[in-house]
Length: 335
Length: 285
Figure 1: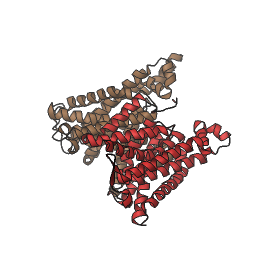
Figure 2: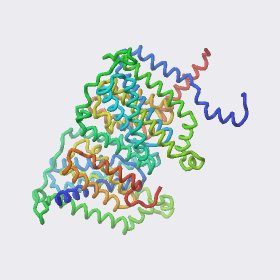
Figure 3: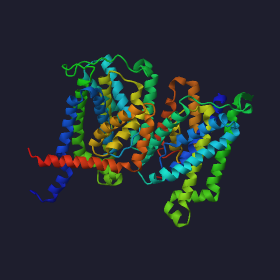
């Protein structure tokens, strides 16, 4: 105990979460190890990384700012189309395309953010859903640009950093997605731990009190909404680049609904929730689809219902126990 | 032009019957029930089965659809909905999406994925000409029936003992309980009634909207638009919202079909921005 002063204590409790927990380091080592341990599953791993990034994006607005959205696929799809079109017509460089996808989706988030500033949860759900539906309709009817129902074909990607050529096994794709995920995740981690992130939590818990204590409510919400939109755009751009194809599916309602499920499985309000949820969701989808390919929707639905009705504590308790054990292991072996 | 308007009104009437059950549950219990369309689909399938397997006439199949959906609503309310009332909106959304997914896959499993049809009796099919307007008999039937329903509901909500108790329970459930109003039973009945209306709407709508397992997902948006735009505290709000929506949708699809559902979504977003608490909202945060 160096400083017992109240200021130091406050600082410690506010910023204590900034330090890296051993379990977090183990998590990322596992993610990299998966590349070597599961060489046949790289395409799925790539999808998990993208879904994880997408879930982190939703968590930024839902878990930290309390904004519910049923149309987060709008930004995912917008980023995907932006990156796909950019690759097709302008430049094949992945990183520039990624920036374009992020920027386009972020801009869209900025433009649509006034919509989420008004009304109740229900209005927000509907307006976000409406935006995604409008984009879906647009993408469908602007066939000359987006390829309509056939999807955007003919995307050719150049090598990452001019060095690594995309291959059919998804080797480069997974490492590329994982690297982008990691960088954006670390950034998000910094952001939610910053005064900005703390003020978001204050808004989430009690908007009235937050604004009374001087938090500029609207601007903070606009900023985090645009940020989350850019993150979703990055996830979409990754999908477009690594699969070299964009279809109307990227804007579909079920993508937003699945994303909610991912986040709910993993847990809302701590960034790893999205990542853990993405892994669990893909595994679940894989297992269910293998024994009943046609009716997997039913089982997902049943899972959701049971989960919300009371299974959540069970699963999260289990995760916490494992994390706690890993953490203890990390502490016991000082290096 | 007037024909389009007429068709739009009929479509709006169906939307109203389908959605006002939802506005009842959503407004009363403050419960976001995205699975409402599943009850409508149930009503539709009951009608199809009753007519094809049992050979019931169309007019008899309608009450059957209402009853089946209402009974299912009653049972589900007891079993799974009640624990959800106290949970957050997000949980309710997830829960009801789960129900929708189950209903969609279940209907696919039981009934197959193809579109279902019903044969309307002869006196309900065809059109006749009335002062230059092409009037579809079936659409006229819908307008009359649903219009009567709307009036009955408005009357029941504002003039009867049941209605006033219900409004009391909505405004303050605790005080209502203190006054000896059986709030739980009232809500359960209301929920069943709302589900029944959805079933009836689904049965009536087969001819106009089609019926296949994706029905709950496809029309979920429409119900929600009606309810959110119309507001949840009155009957007239959703009614006007449904009319507006029905006319706009039908007109849009006739005149500029390439835009598809775009008009509806844009209309919704605009309305929600300008009136975030619905068309005729009482002051409510």
